[in-house]
Amino acid sequence: MVVGRPPGHAFISYVREDALRADRVQRALEAAGVEVWRDTRDLWPGQDWKIEIRRAITHDSLVFIACFSEVSEKREISYQYEELNQAVEQMRVRRPGRPWIIPIRFAECTLPDFDLGAGKSLDSLQRIDLFDGHWDEGIAKLVRVVVHALESDDQPRLLTRRRLLSAAGGAALVYVTSTSADTRGRPDNGRLASGASHTVEIGNPQQWETGHWGLLGVADIAFTRDGALIATGGNETLEGTTRLWDTVSHQRVQILTGGAAPVAFNASGRHLATGTSDSQVRIWDMSSFTSSPPLATDNLQFLTFVPGTDLVVGGSGNGRLQTWDVTSATLVASTTTPHIVDAVAFDQDRNMITCGLHSDVSGKGSVVVWDVTSARRLHEFPEMGRPTMVNPDGTLLIAAGAIDADGNAHNLVAWDLPADRQIAVLLEEPGFTVGDAVIAFRPDGRMFAVGFNGRLHLWNSRQVAGRMVVDEAAKSVQVGDGSSITSIAFSEDGKMLAAGDNNAILYLWQFRSLSGTD
Image 1 (cartoon, rainbow, N blue to C red):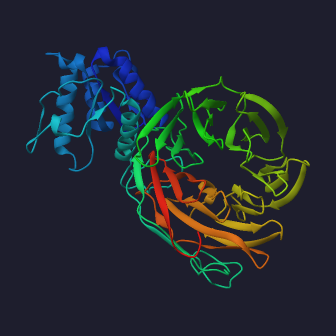
Image 2 (image 1 turned 180 degrees about the vertical axis):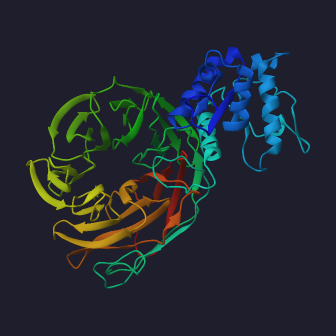
């Protein structure tokens, strides 16, 4: 083994002229937490390079990435062929069905004719193209395949937002409002009180790869008000991207290079506010797909528009709350809250309400609901934690429940803020912490979705006889196969629901009302 390198890496094979292209592949893999072996970096002075390369391929490598181009195609003699011969020997003794040799092409070219045995050749393997505009999609696919191959069979798959796991399909959702009389229900026992009964069905989702390759895949989602477009924001570490998608054809409309999560459209759809990879803000003109210079902020958590205006609000992890006018791309207000700003709502008087986690000098945390207009604390919930989300009018709080001695929360609760009472335990996960749950409200506030541990949950929320009621709206469904949900959004009319996962897959469901109202 090469000194100082842990076992279990991706070996990149290439010709010298393709070194810069291989550099880009290496950076993308390492940004996803993948260990990479390169001859230019991992060979030490005095080492026998042939022995060390063979050892790197046969002993420690769990995937062999073979890079080809118009340059390699012309080579009659190349050290890469020796590496490929060793890789082919390894493939013949490895368990069938697991990825080992992954061919990628940097340009249009023919792969060399290597006999893999059993009637297969190198050209018969599924390859990944990284040219002619396919780089983003191709590198996202490569990262997912490599991470999947590097996962050990004897280690459990921990479903967190920082894992890149394999993607698969979804399932149909049918939800029926419960008529249980409980006031503190749980997802597995019927749910809370309900004065109504209506059924909505959303079938199997449409799904497609977005090409984002950051650790969170699709880190944020936003619909235009008319539902015609979806914006997806990534959290790529090198150069962020925001991508626009047609909700009917599912075709990509545009890549906005330099944009990143979070994302938010104004009411007219003429402007899109995005984050950047270095946590600034850009304002994009949708008619020309051009942006303003970056606007300064720090540790940006979310973006949302003040209803009926062209003012976008950004909340940060240091409690800072900033408001920009997107028509002029200028800062118009800035204030500070006593908590991490996770979400913003506007009450019936259009006062701005925020929520998030506050930590005192001792490190003890509590969830705070804050009135920005009057600069006063409306509610504080000791021993509760993130994630936190408040409904559009600031009357319902969703947050992690009681925190254990290790600082972990294992349930998610709903809190009626005007009545100052807990009305539901939404999730109970004794074996997991709910800190990675993702929450989104429908714009009318009558429904919300939670993504956690690879499953999507739906709840109704409304007033019944003067009391806030939350009841289970759907039997939860698996999204993907071992993936983690990283973002959720409803369309403005509430008829579409989109979710993104850490495999960079976007799922889109259509709602259909069967009875009652939706």
